[in-house]
Image: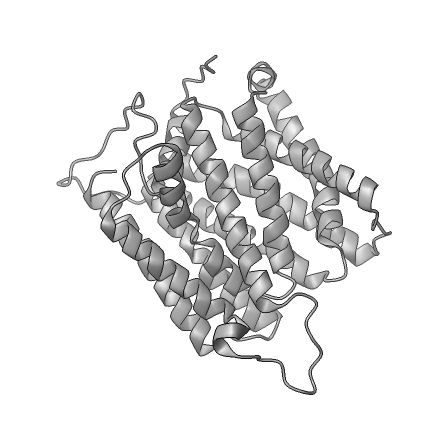
Length: 340
């Protein structure tokens, strides 16, 4: 079964996905023209603006959890999917993609959606103890993890330099999380134990990156073109069912206050807007440029922590972030120099 969607935007979406991952050989049947090195790229201001807006909202969609700390993560993710499913469904109806949607219900797509649901669960849970900038930094290791998973699942090469960069990313995560068995106990005698220990939250942030990478590799293994809105529909519906069953079995659902409900609503709207902005960005700008702009999330998350939450990263967090982002940018440089 193959979905035929001859749309240049979809080709660009696949190219962006591959550039964000470590390798780009999963779609050999797709020919992506590479501009000559002698032709300077003319940056599209509107495309860059869309990408920056998407990166900003991606931070805000998670940072909202910090403003409504008493809302349980499963309930937050369940309620927000109600809004996103309605919005995404409307887009599919307007763009007449329902026929392709029916054909897309396959095992790999469902596994991809499950991976993204687990990614969101670990992502939002880690925010209980980590700052937004710490989590965004840890989450940025998903590119390295994609390379490792692709080498195992898709038998793609994983070079020595990529292994070294992966180790640097892992060292950066350790410096950010500062596990007590390496750095000692950071809680003073007069302080209350946190609801979730930092090192556990760090592990969950790393698991969020892992499941995101696993979902990306799953998409690449399918070797078919599936529009982004359809993938978004599967992700949101899967999350709705997953958390609905969880709340039904485990309980814990409680009435939301007015401000909490608006916070959850805004998180859902941000999620919907991110999909639209990323699609518009890669319509107008090179996927490699859009991929690099995504790293502006570190700046946005740092501004949120300092200006809104009144927290400032520690020295070890800065060093760990330098390890992770230095490795990621060097990997992007290697990919571009190799013509990937």
